[in-house]
Amino acid sequence: MRLAGKTALVTGGGSGFGAGIARKFAAEGARVMIADINLAAAQAVAGALGGEAAEADVASNAGVAALAKVTLSAFGHLDILVNNAGITHMPKPMEDVTEEEFDRVLAVNAKSVFLTARHFVPQMKERGSGAILNIASTAGLSPRPNLNWYNASKGWMITATKTMAVELAPRGVRVNALCPVAGETPLLASFMGEDTPERRSAFLSTIPLGRFSTPEDMGNAACFLCSDEASMVTGVAMEVDGGRCI
Image 1 (tube, rainbow, N blue to C red):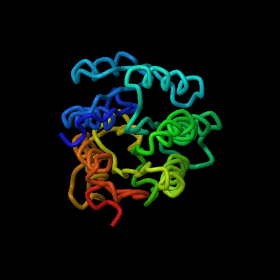
Image 2 (image 1 turned 135 degrees about the vertical axis):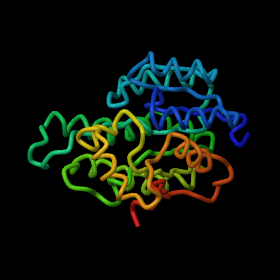
Image 3 (image 1 turned 30 degrees about the horizontal axis):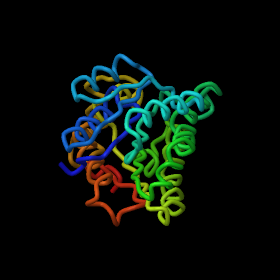
C-alpha cells in the first residue's frame, strides 16, 4: 500500500499504459481519477477499480479546466498527476505529415502538459507537495525514421520534465518521466505502420529483452516514481524499454 491516502489523476487512463498505471495505483491504495477522451473506456476502468472517471480533451484549455474542477471537487486536492494521454502520426517521411497531423500530435503530447501544469501545479505548490509523471517514450531518446514529429514531441516532454523538476523542486513537487518502448496498446499498429507478425518480429528484434513494454511494467515503474520511496528522485527520464536505448 505504497500510495495509501494519495489521490491520483491519470490522463488517457481508459486503455493501454494509462489503464495499467491506474490499476497499479489503485492496488497500492490510491484514489484514482481516470480521464480519457473516451468516457465509456474511462468508466469501464474506473468501475473495475472503484475509482472516478471523467471525459477530457487534454489538448483543450477548457477541457483541462473542467477536468481540474471535477478532480479537485472529488478529491479535495491532487497528490499525483500522470500525463499519459498521447497520440502519434502514421510512419511517413517528415515532409508528408500534414499540418493538421502535426498540430494534433503536438497539442495532445506537448500542449497538454502545459495545460495540466496551469491547472494543477498551483494547488501542489500551495500544499508544498506533489508528484508529476510524464509518459514520454524511447522515441524521445533514440528516434527512428518516419516518426519524426512524434519523436520530437516526446523529446519535448523529456526536456519539459527536467525544467519542471528544477523549477518545482523548491516547492516540494517532484517531476519525472517514463520512456517505454512500444507496447500492447492502441497505438502499436500506428507505430509499426501495420500490425503483422513480420512487423512485430522486426520490431522485437531491436529490443534486447525481446518483448514489448506492458501496462504492468509501466504501472510498476510509475508507482515507484510517484511514491515516497522516490522522494529523492526528480528530473529523471526512466527507460522502461528492455534495453532498446542501449
